[in-house]
Length: 516
Ligand code: NAP
Image (cartoon, rainbow, N blue to C red):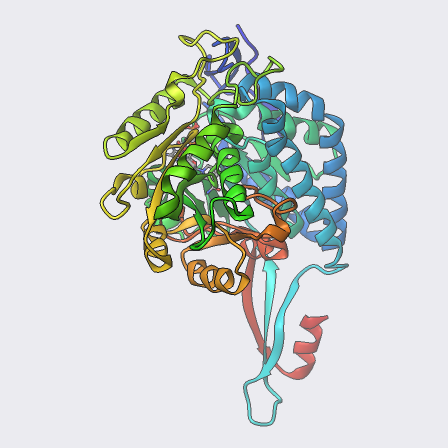
């Protein structure tokens, strides 16, 4: 029998009951470890986190908690090699794809440690200036942001077991709010190992960081009014969670990052030999293949002027044909596997659905896989689809295929392109490629209303931009509508979720005192 990973809850390591659920190597099919959350006393575990760890965290200043994050970063850095091994084994990712998750996590922790220092020796935040509520300015209102006295529960998706934890935990801990993370079962090992390293190093107050691996049963029932819940995953699970009494009746604050049909848009009047055409082609091929397309921010729809449809299809296909797919342990392989056979089946099903109203421009299914048994491994080469009439093809605007699949769509003019982009119903990110800065800026402002992020690539920044799909801690992550309506990161804005805003009304002396 493989190892049963322990949970850390109520300030101690505890094994769930039963044999648990197995985690597998998606390349070999071998069982790696098992997880179980059965029988855990979540109510008292949550209570311990709120009362014991919450109190100790809140007694510190922002600068002191920033120092804790720095120490967390040192612990994670020291164990980085082990994280890469787990990622290869459990997520089937090549080294550069594991880096997106693991080094992305380390960078995010370091960024919040640095940002936190700027908040200094305070225990709450002042929000704006005071305003007079009386004619003679003797009675005023001052808004404050104070850390919530609840805990933060994170229910995470399978594709970012490292970054998905730390992009949320860093701002929560900096705010003084204890964290309980429930990673997606299929890749829970890396999250559990990171929590274990930090807990064992003793850098945080006991109970400031807890982990529950396995079923989510009972987690939401244990939430109280001042807790917050951050969910990342599918729109279907998000809908179930929104109906839970903790949210519907106890008003637990919730942030949802769900699926998203992101776009890349080549601006009108970009010629086939322009740097912008080249930038779009390069970025699309990269986004389709990094982490095998299992990124919530990956480009799913590519919009090009109609006269460039064929040449864009050929140029993207030419790049995709050079991507070797297979066993990430083989040095010739550029793209590893999907996370599981279940996920492979779901992606293939989604691809078949999209194919029913599109044409295949690059057929990944015909590409041989390297160093794997196709009957066992969860590998799949990229496929580029094309829809010549974007107004008619509905499925591509509605259905997220969470794998190496994207669809090329032509547009008549910029207005038409913007209409088509909006059919995604709200997305995490759109990227724009062109050289007319005025037109790009106007389009960015127009599309900002239905996106969390607009990523603009002009020739000047083509070699240095941070990437369509890379979520930077300094910039907002989240999106309206079908993307879940959430907001994460964005520098110190991330702390808002873990604070309560309140207005204190009183005399000048009281206001001066709460401001200091
Ligand atoms: P999922 O099936 O919805 O699972 C997400 C998490 O919810 C997992 O931890 C899962 O646990 C848990 N869960 C399942 N049923 C639940 C319930 N009834 N109550 C509470 N929790 C429950 O999603 P996924 O397949 O892991 O992730 C893929 C999706 O996530 C994609 O659609 C992708 O677009 C989205 N995603 C979005 C972002 C973003 O930032 N916007 C980032 C990454 C991924 P188990 O694993 O134990 O079932």
